[in-house]
Length: 555
Image (tube, helix red, strand yellow):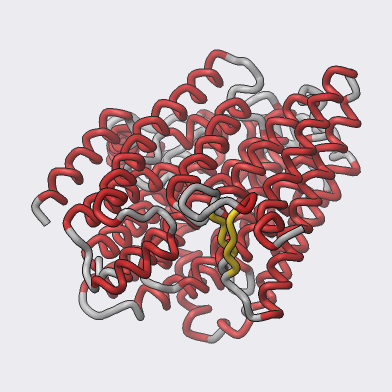
């Protein structure tokens, strides 16, 4: 098979698995359906690895091709560059492990496995697409499958969350297509490589190109759930099955990062520094607001969702600062520890019948869990809060170094300090979540994980620990002390949040879930919640986009 068809293999193989899973649905053969889907994703992951290793060893990275032997102007342009070679195997591998975990849920059948496989193929297509139009096509495949997966359990609230995701996506993709029109009209190109070459020769961005790129970045920002385009994510996580929540955070959000990177290449080719700085600050604001909004969530899946908004803000800031290595490292770290957290906390919530943090503690939290579940939860918490020696610590240090070294003045030091404040918010919010380990009573004992679920936990646990070991060179007395101070300050915020807010012990406050009316922290909590909801509303989204559109007309 030729090189261009070979580039399409990672997309085609999961589709074959999906087709066979649908056939198994007609035979009512659940095990066969999941086996077909798992095999297709595994084969796609292997194809990604082979292509990446071959291109790397031969020095032909980036590798480009056109599917089916078509002319570049009419065919599907494919590109295997460094982000694609990194994200492709990573996202397919995580998808494979998540689907393995989903096999333990008897409510999910062959249809789920088939739709999940198509979603994985869509993610692979976004990662490999070498032209802006086919990025849109694969994005839509991924989005439609994600909406089906969110609403899969058929509850009215789940249907609403899926509908909200689709409507928000429709608005954003309309702006993406509008930007595509502007860009094509100005340059006559949609392929990324010729587009970058043409703009590099011009040396600057024409007004229409700048406007088109701004519209496209706004559209892709929704896929990454950056503020203010984040409103769909908490509701989607809250209603989706546990495996789907892990997929949304570990896989779907990462595809948008690849597209942002490629749009940044176009911007940097034409000296589009104002737009790059705007994206940097969008990431910084997302990191800060997402981290602190998580502190005020009662729903544990909403807490994890806002944390994802924050972590993706870090990665976006790193991309805009030109720190690609930091962005890739922290993306992988987030994909691993957040997928594991969603699987652990989601499983606990399903077994105990509630997502409410206070009710989960009343029912025993993780006190009735197995040793492996508790160990996995502790390691994932250590990673996300940035304890020295774990992957989250290394990722944040790399991001902070990249942002600080991106320039001078407020854009560098101001962004760095706000990101440090976001790290404090992360520690505080996950300090609250860690109280699930300190339930007031043994409570309800939950069934132990199955062999497949234990296997998934071990895989994620090993990957998180291994990634942390890769960058032990970042450990030194200064950064370790800063991290420990942040951890201590976060613990103080947790205590202040509950004790000053309710006049009771943290245990009593969490058990009732109430705060004293009229208290300062109660007012802050309510105001923060209102602000975050307003920023995430559809009205706020459209207003933000139209405002940016009008501002850019005057740049």
